[in-house]
Each structure stands twice: as C-alpha cells, then as structure tokens.
Amino acid sequence: MGFFSAAKAQIGGQKAYRAHIAANELANDGKPEEAAEKYQQVLKQYEEAVAGAPQPPNVTLGYAILLMRLGQFEKAMDVMQKLRLDKNLKENDWFDIRLNYSVCLWKLGHLDDAIATAKRAMQIKTCGAIYNTLGMYLVEKAGQTGDFAEVEAFNAEAMDYDDEDPGILDNMGGMYEAKSKFAADPAPDREKAKEYFAKAHALKPRQIVTMYALARMYHEDGQDEKAREALKPAENLYYSAVCAVTPEMMEQLKREVG
Image (cartoon, rainbow, N blue to C red; front, side, top):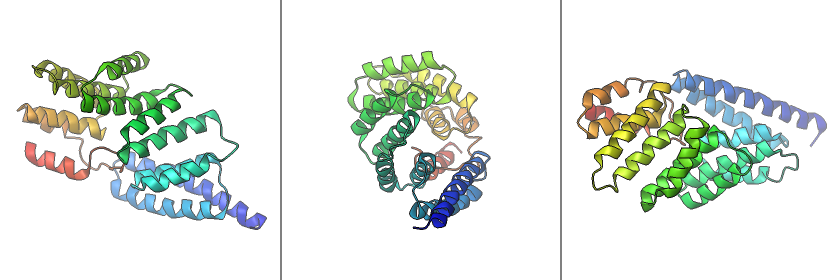
C-alpha cells in the first residue's frame, strides 16, 4: 500500500468518525429516518477506511459501535478483537472495548460472560456508563435467579455515585419490578419501581426503555391515563439494535393503552 493511499484512507476514517457523530445528533434530535440513512452512509465510509489502512482506536471503535447499533454484533466483536492487538491502546480504550464487547455478549444471549466482561471494564474505572450497563445486566440476572443481594449492593453504590442519572434510576426501577415478581405481595415493590421509572422519565423523557417500562407498568395496573402521558414523547424516536425495546413493542403498547 502506498503512502498516499494509506494517508487517504486514514483521512477517510476521520471523516467517517465525524459523520458518525453528526448521525447521532440527528437521532437525538428526533430525525430517525435521516439518522438511519446517514448511518448507512457512514457504514460505507468506515468500511472503505478500515480496508484502506490501519485506523486509530477511536475510529475503529466507532466502526464497531455503529455495527452494534445496526445489529451486526458478531462482526462488531470481530472488529474489537482485532483492535485489542493495537499496541497504542490507552486505559480508556480498553475500558471502551470491554464495555462495548460486553454489550455484544449480552445481545447474543451470553449474560454471564457480559457481566464478567463489564466487571473487567470496571477494574479500569467507574463512571455512569459502567453503572448503567453492568447494573442492567445484574438486574436481568437477579430477575432470572431471584437472588438480589449483588444487584441491590451494586445499585446502592450507583445511587451514591449519581442519584440523578436516568440510567441508574431506570436500573433501580427494573430491580424493584423484578423483585415484585418474587414477593408474596408485589404491590410495594411495584410502586417503588414506578417511582424510580417516573424519576428517570422526568429527567430524560425520550429514554426509550424507561418510557416503555413506566407506561407498561401503569397499563398493567389499570392506570392507562398515566400510561398515555408517559408515552407522549414516543414519537420520532430512533431505535438502535442495542435497545431492549423494539418499535413493534412500543407500537403494541400504544395500541393497548389507546
């Protein structure tokens, strides 16, 4: 590969990375169709750049994250496995790789491996992202086993870290909803779950998983007026393949609550 060809590919990688950020802004601004079209364009840019020359970690990881967003989890894992061979990786790079790799494992049904990988990421640093992601895994695990000791301790630590983080509050809601399914009287835990979901929803109304969970619980408890109110922001949303809620699930719930 010639010097100029490699330089051109590296410039292309940086352009793809910047275009990726612009596409994220479209998704966040309630322009899902434009965002989806932009993501497909960015995917081609990334693929051309990666094929043309080795890219810096931020570009390669950006490519992997876009693959995840588009549901190509196994390919994203392969990209991150190759990225691990880069001798220039910094601690933050390793954190990002491990955390995103754990998401792929989770989406592919390997919950225990996802938890272990996220815990390895947490050995590097603690931040909102790790409390959000690992907390979500631990809620799901507790919901399967009925053992809430670890998730309760972890979420208490997370709340000490930031009790106004919408993701952490969502995990609290998820934990109490899961606990309610093992309780002789589920009502107290369900009310706590709705309280936490409502706090998260107030802070971030367009957070899809919270909006859905809150509205679904209101609907299940016969509070459809509250459910409709919770679902008001459910327009012009971009649904990443990483999201646990699909557009079909949201539309079905909207029909049920009228």
